[in-house]
Amino acid sequence: MGILSNLEPRSVFRYFEEICSIPHGSGNTKAISDYCVHFAIEHHLDYLQDDANNVIIFKNGTTGYENSAPVIIQGHLDMVCEKEQGCDIDFTKDGLQLQLEHGTVTANGTTLGGDDGIAVAYALAILEADDIPHPPLEAVFTVDEEIGMLGAAALDCSPLKGRMMLNIDSEEEGCLLVSCAGGASATAHLPVQTKKASGTLATLHITGLLGGHSGVEIDKGRANACMLLGRTLYWLKKEFAFDLISVNGGLKDNAIPREAHAKLVLSPDTDRKRLSEALSAQNSYYKNEYKQTDAAVQVSLTEEKEDVSIDVMTPETADKAISALCCLPNGIQYMSHDIEGLVQTSLNLGILSTKEGNASSGNEVSFTFSVRSSISSQKGELIDKICCLMESLGGSVSCKGDYPAWEYRQESPLRDLMTSIYEKQYGKKPVINAIHAGLECGIFSDRLPGLDCVSFGPDIKDIHTPKETLDVESVQRTWNYILEILKELR
Image 1: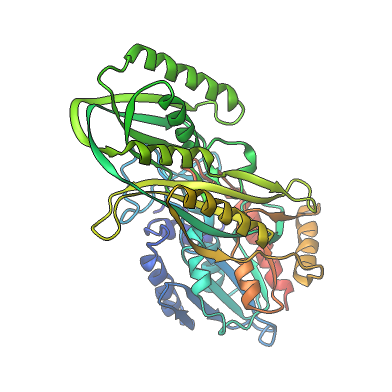
Image 2 (image 1 turned 90 degrees about the vertical axis):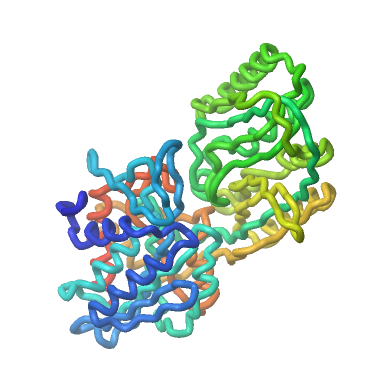
């Protein structure tokens, strides 16, 4: 019997628990895609599975809805895989360890994947049932949403006849999203030249940050560990002699990095007491600056081995890497003048990596950003800024996963219907909002002319972090809401 087996709605939580038992991180979606195919076969439903692992499952309308217009139910199969330090789960082959406490579902030491496993669970529960009134359904499960919406971009949308879409990929109950930013993933590449150096091997750590989703939490003022690492290295090199081996931090371009680390070789004559005092002072500065958002920020240095002789970056390369970390843009760039409080344009340095190359590519430091904007020209401006700096440093920039913004519709019968149903169910109006985070609705709206779409979902907090929680009662209320929407779409 599963951890969630006694929760209502039972079918939804049963499918959610099954999904959590299958590894389904971005880029590792074959197993979860096949799971959806097996579901369709078992329930005698027509389906399509493409080479990218996207799946579409079709179901006829129930009695009285046979001739109704089809409705698309859409969510993504992949999850962001983040874990706490010391957690031994291997996301490529292990399922999640679910926990249920005080009305919330979490995963022990890892992200939960409520974003967007709950959408898949809702859809499968509806497709399974024979007592839920609904129009013809087209359940669309895309992959690799979290790494640039690659699945939606690769999907052949021609089999889809629906022009109303329920995108269940939002994390705040009572908020109906009707517009989102477009985005892209941009990676800056800085070639690395090396030399031999001798001294004490050490690691500089930036830890203790909250992190979060770079679209949802970018306006919370949280620190970016990679940017703090660059700032700390620049400050240290003005006072102390060291050689830089590598810089690394972050795991996903759309997650604000919680940790970053630099491998160093300290000069034999470095004054350890003065270095310790200097780092302590820098730690105090950060704690003061981020006392409201990242009070647990920690700067530390661990010495690992004395008298090493090792390959390090040349001084020129190290200076360029540190300069890039200090000068590359990051965070909010523009706020919207049309929608109060909406971030219009931002970028997040989500992955910092020092890579060993081969005979053809060579070593490099790479800086991978999630770039977002509801105005395409400003998205281009940010990518140009990255290119301009990297070209001056002898580097280059590559982009992938470019997706369009989802523009607001003045006339939306689906939005009006969902608003009316919400008022009857909850006794108050829902919040109609736009979001800075990217949603696949932009791609589908671009591919399906006339698409009327709303994004919504139950309460999921701290997504893309190991503190992620899914609220049980909110899942139940949202389930009832979805069923009423389908019932009214006759």
